[in-house]
Image 1 (cartoon, rainbow, N blue to C red):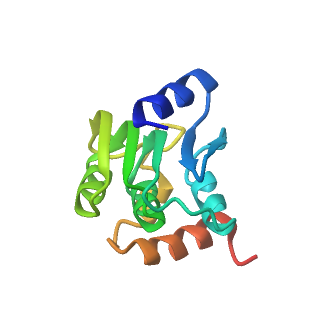
Image 2: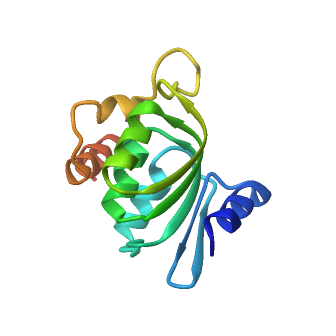
Length: 137
């Protein structure tokens, strides 16, 4: 699927993120980085694949880089996310760039973006985010 087709699937399906992997359309309605972490845990191979996401902060950008996604549509992306995508060679189409992603209540910054503020290493970000989202299962 093309990036344009994934964008359409994202918007028309009411998903939070979608990806095309191995001839299969992966979809999720979960918010935040949870679906990305789930795909990593399931061993989904997204190297060289395209994806589309409604909101991409630095945390999600680092996870997309970790998974090896080559093209990404983001409805909204933070400046740090756009920088990560650029540095890791992800061909990104971004609807709107904002300074930072806000939390759902609008009272501060996204806790996931804040959690990875001190790293630019996708592998480190994956560990930090798994601990933050899933704890020490």
